[in-house]
Length: 295
Length: 252
Image (tube, rainbow over all chains, first blue to last red; front, side, top):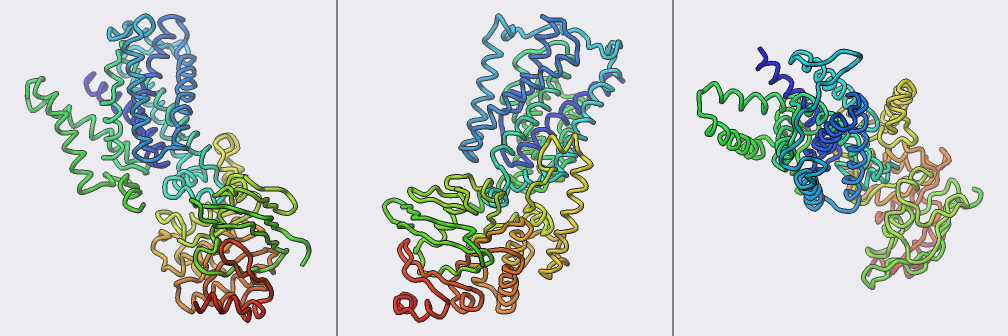
């Protein structure tokens, strides 16, 4: 039972991550490799505050979201000047920098040893300790993220994002501020990723930099692509599939060393297959190829 | 017709040493349709790009209703009331016809995240009004039946009509139309010209770039013939048409 709850919690965390990346990459068309960095910043801010300041869960959450959102603005700003592949590389650089700071600033972040002993969160006087409690906590944040995203993408602002994705010149001629749209969507996406990071840190109670590597960013991107970018439910489907699939491998009875490698092979194979035969993913309405094909 | 709505003064712009605009000046009066003709490379589209803020001029000023607008970014100019269409026909092809029109409305509260979450009723009401108005525009244009289809599914002529409808939805006073009837079927030309001819009755002023001289003669109040970035001749459509320099340029 606890195992099932654990999987459900992980799914919720990855839904938050992929839905927020989808806002940036699927709706605004800005493919970002830095999502694990925002995820990590969220986790580290909450963990450091909880360990050093003993501040309550919600305060840590708010601080993590604000700091990550500010970093989002920082990463989003270059998108006003550099485009497509070059922007992907710029976000990649930010991801690598963040990882290296977490890994090497030993006195502050604990370096490769990570931060152990993150206390259990307390909300309205209730301490969340059981798996079920965590599932309710994480699930409600996941649902709120979906609600907020739903509101955004169905709104006139969501329409502006799609216009920015498809044709910036037309968007400008229609009087839309492309610059503020791009930066805002990055702030929102980064803030939501931080929510996932905070929840992860409290749930696992131990964090180290290896959870927030480039590979993690790529994993989140593959959830978005396989689930379907530019659609609200696509990343949800993608998160369920990509979190559950490797778990199924356990039941085949493979030794864990083989299973771990097989996992990577399956992700890679899935990505290639989807890119070749179904670039829109399961539910998507946007493919990352199209823009280059037209230009 | 009263004073000028748009005034362009001594605009200059070069690309790699080629002068696209060489001290070009003109004025657009209220409720006037001004035709802009000239050979390819005369600087007509560059003029539009400069007036709408997509390209910065090297010299010269632009003013809209006596306010200097030189150097403002495109979205600010659009919100001040300049709408344009593009020669290479830009629309958001993946979005529905209706969404393209809805996108074009100005001052939408739902485009601000703050208002979206804290004044959501305002946003919904505004959106509902815009939607109603957008469908009205599409009905007037005769493409309301395709409102839900992606803009990409429209014929080329209908797409040009749609980009004109988007300018109307923007509520702009100055419309810059770049070859609105080039390359489309005769019936659609009639329809688009009819819409353009009606614009002054709605208090709108238009600059029209068009190679189809018949179309220019039909709708324009005044025509400027442009070559090598400068004004060569100006007058009523008949005067310009009979100008030997224009005849020479169009035959040569």
